[in-house]
Image (cartoon, rainbow, N blue to C red; front, side, top):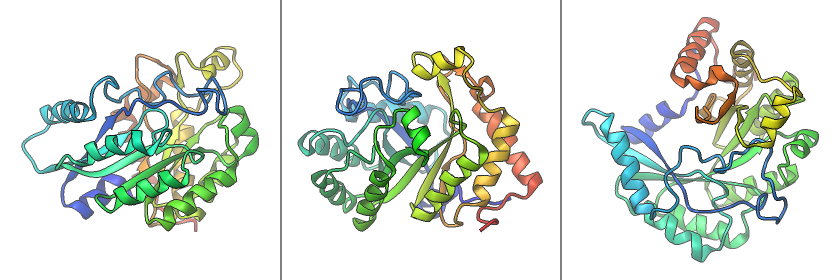
Length: 302
């Protein structure tokens, strides 16, 4: 079994373990404030997918300090570093004057090795790209783009709010500035076949973004997706189905693409389905065991 996982990649590059610190920059989203929609993506929780992020009312420095303290309580004394991860909502949605001081504050922490920014491809105007390029000269910057699917019908259904060429242009613009791109893909979106999911993953592979996050579809409380699930309009994947799909995807990804995530987990207090995903440690152990049994190797189908 072999796949190019994030943990090993970081250990090789930084010679130490790096932990993500989920931060909240106090942003919103154009899909919520009326710019391109009012209700957000159909699967997105009230916290803008930042259910594990810090308290947005606190200054970034305090968010960092408290997040580090929580991690350090669980760790033996060892040399570690951190990734400042701006996770909730759309973190390039705003002016350079608003955003740059927040990012600089996070990067100013000596233990922060990488700045990771989750955003939408349609929120990367030229001045924002120029800001990201400046920051990338100080410390490595990752930009995480929420693509989810390449299929127009599904994109309309989930209310993504932009067309596929917008993603393509964003990837190109970031690459031109030598900024690493991580693409988010959701597996198990209603109406999609295994072939549809694989087509999305293969497309991301061809774009040659540096990383990919493979995310299981979760149904969370207070989302429009939850209402559709309760009405019986779709079913979520079983663990066996999900492992089969993951295997297929990994075999079709370029060997040098870093896999940042194999599943993800919704906050248990708001998780409706699939319930099996609530125990992330158990799920990851089962996935790794199955991958070893099947001798899964990234890129073996290319």
